[in-house]
Amino acid sequence: MIISLFSGQGSQYPNMGNDILAAYPHTGELYDIASDVLGRDMRKVCFESSPEELAQTINAQPAVLLTSLVCNSAAITRVHKAGIPFRFDGVAGHSLGEYAALTMSGMVSLEDVFRLIKARSEAMDEAAREHKGAMAAVMKLAPEKIEEVCSSAKNYVAAVNYNSPMQTVIAGTPEGIDEVSEIFAEMKARVVRLNVAGAFHSKLMQSAADKFYEAAKKIPFKAPHVKYYSNVTGGELTDFSDMPALLAKHIVSPVRFTSELAAMHADGADTFVEFGPGKTLTGLVKKTLTDVRAFNVENLETLEKSEEIYG
Image 1 (cartoon, helix red, strand yellow):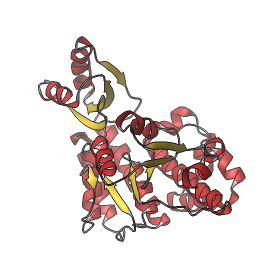
Image 2: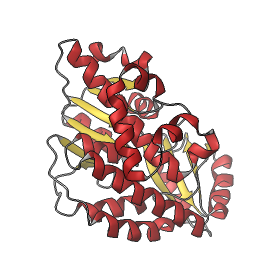
Image 3: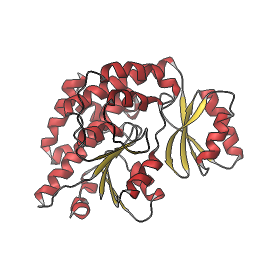
């Protein structure tokens, strides 16, 4: 069973996807669609932005989504040219990555996924400016202990990304992050502050969730043609009756990626392929599951693995 995974915000880097675009010119159509919907030249955003510019939420979210779809499209083309069927049995994404998963599962069109990400990135950017927040990764400490410390903090902070058994991301006010970081350091845990603009997946994003919901209600959704695994539920999603509400809830809910991996593995998943910049999810798979194969496709070099993956 093959799972297609899609990268999240924070994985972006300047010039990502440019070598694939040059080698696979047909992927230029994806840049054109994204640029038309977003009202910006997404080639310039992806290839000419500085690291600081690209890290801005309104740039990072559409750029990572676009690059993930480009990598996926190139892999499909390469595999088909080799006479090998491109097959995947399920999709999952980490936070932002769920939007590439929406499209690749057949739930929304390309145009509509960029309409969704435009609304999402603008709403989250606005909320981050209104409510100052921060995030940090806590390593070498069990999630339950992290939750316990956060719940006892005087300032707001919460566990929001369950990435692996020994890596959990927290979000909250800067004061809350500072408060618990000192406690985690005393507990010999490693704490790494993340370079993000807000406290994503926490209650500080509620205004973004409310605003995004109004935009998402205008988008038509279909049932997926493969298994779709959800950050919100931590397992396979089977109820698609109100996707706008679920995606709005996603903005203020924890990313239960560890639970998702367990659910996929229990369903028989033995091969995971991450499409998009970086290889964060590939690393999380390898740290969490032992008897599986994990690959990432982000450039021409990693694209060469396609025949091995699908052959």
